[in-house]
Length: 73
Image (cartoon, rainbow, N blue to C red):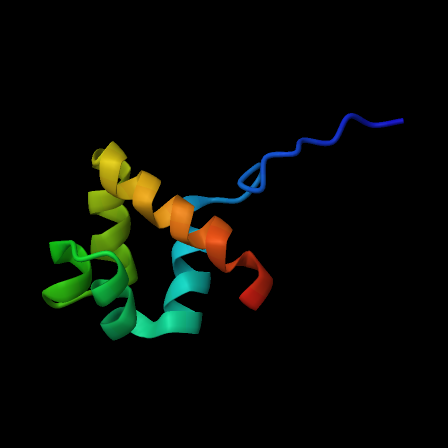
């Protein structure tokens, strides 16, 4: 029997998380839920990934929103 992780983020890339959030909420709503510049000023997946990979507190907010939104996807 395999030991499966109870972590909902296990095996999911930051890019996948961000793509699902953008597909569901769009950058406009995402920037209201998490008001960070990479979502409010000329947003793109690429620029957001660059910022989130360097900024732990912002990545944590995105991951938390993803976990809260899992039932909606």
